[in-house]
Image (cartoon, rainbow, N blue to C red; front, side, top):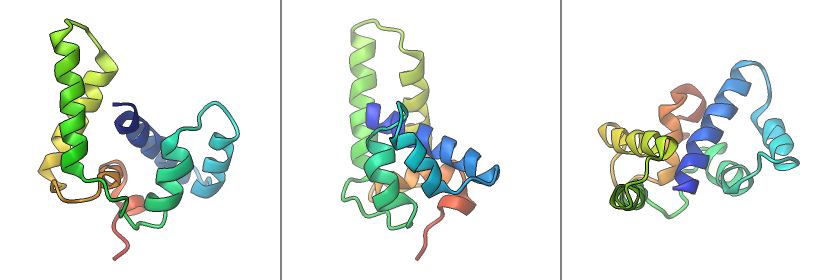
Length: 120
């Protein structure tokens, strides 16, 4: 659930900064030097997102499954986790535009298609 959340929240932060004129790579340097760093900022964005490679080896289908399992666990424990619920909804909704076999990092394309679209 954390990786799923970090990927989307980083996509939103980078897209907002890019629209404000901040270079995405410079933003990541700043985030990684402070408390905003995560696997998304340190690995996913530099390796698979900014270059539009989308080839991490982990699929949308697997991440949707994992997020669903985490959501089911929270429900079974009768826990109200609003952020996790929204993240799960975003991953589930992504099935409308992103196939299960696509790379999980492609979820960022739903944030800003122009910035994150495939570089094929």
